[in-house]
Amino acid sequence: MYQASEQLMALNKAQLEAAARFAGVALQGAEKMLELQFQAAKNAFADGIENARALAAVKDLQELAALKDNLAQPTIEKATAYAKSMYDAAVDTQAQFGRLIEQQVAEFNKQVVTLVDRLSQDAPAGSEVGITALKSGIAAVNAAYDNLAKLTKQFAETAQANIESAGKQAANEAKKATKKGA
Image 1 (cartoon, rainbow, N blue to C red):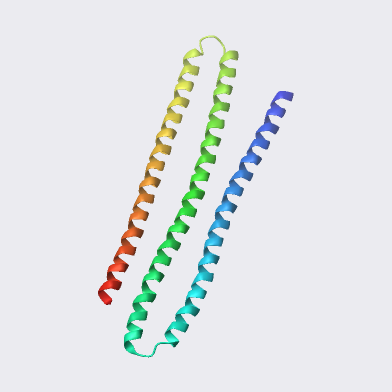
Image 2: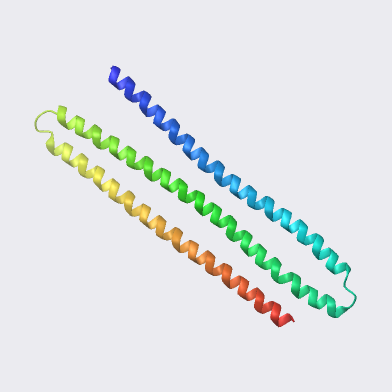
């Protein structure tokens, strides 16, 4: 009884520590995104003031046309950079969650294997087949989890490459549009 109580306390402590790590990752991710949003708002305000001053200084339609082209490109580039920064922050947070989950699964698997080994030592004669089947089932679940984790990682990498490609393409299209308008 004493050993079971001690094991339960250790399990509770481990779960509390894991929850604290998850909360820390979530808070870091939220903090990063809030910083990006605040910086984007500050930059947008400063750009707005600068653009208003530039517009107020326009004296004719030719200056206005030139100013329009000069204002559009940096705005598109900044918006693209902001979106990429937010995406990168989300991907980083997700990757940290993934690592924590992998650690939790590995620890859980280790505990299950230890428990099964203890049970097999105390099991009655003839139960080896059942224990072997249980171990095979655990190995199959672990293999399925590993495959799912690999697929998820490949999907995230593909999505990252697509986002970066789309960002570059949008910036290039904006440059082409600005040049055609000039």
